[in-house]
Image (cartoon, rainbow, N blue to C red):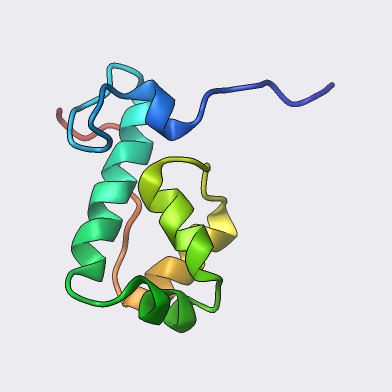
Length: 94
C-alpha cells in the first residue's frame, strides 16, 4: 500500500498563510503548529533556532512557510530546542 498524496499545509488554508483558519482539520493543526512555532521563535533568528534544535535552518523556514509536513522528529527537536511545546490540540476550539 503506497502513501496517499496530500497537499502541503499552505494549500489547506486560505491565504495569507498561516493567518486565516483552515476548514480542514489537519490543515488547521498544521497552521496552529506554525503559529505556535512563530510565537516560540519570537525575536530569535531562524538560524539560532535551527542550531538549538540540531537541524538546518531551511527546514525551519519550510515548516514556517507551510511547504512541508514536519515529522515527529522535527517537531520534537524544535520543542526541545525552543524549550516549549508546539503541538496544538486537534480538538481545540476554533
